[in-house]
Length: 195
Image (cartoon, rainbow, N blue to C red; front, side, top):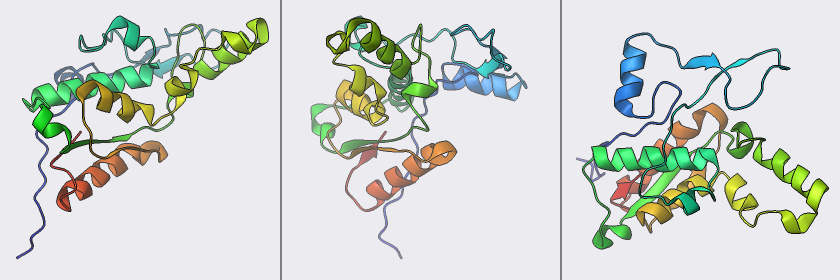
């Protein structure tokens, strides 16, 4: 008999073009609805393709202040929203006793440049800021908004997890790798809970 720990998924969270919750996304998927539609986050009139899978009507969870949300790129806000739903779905509050036993393993395919920060992509926007106003006009949050590992980093800070914290970046398999990493961390006893 193996002494390996069993790993179970106790909560799910979702922010996607099909819906901003697991229930919405599952309902849309089950009824054959598509999350693809006209691009609305920026003017795509000069592009050959004017459709995409955009997250629509997303609201940052109340746990994040408006001031803090402004320091987060969209993909980070989405990560926080999905984590909040997963914790609620699991009926889990990360108490002070659980902080050291809880980690975050997240997968992000690209991050900032793949998402639109109105009115321009994050790196493009900051390039124009330097060109027009000089380097002193760059936000000190530019790099923290751009780095993919800030998605699990912000999730960790918002929900006060203090164990393993890292981001798998392997294109379309990023999330699968993140789930595998989380399972192995629990299995070997390095953490009790992984988001």
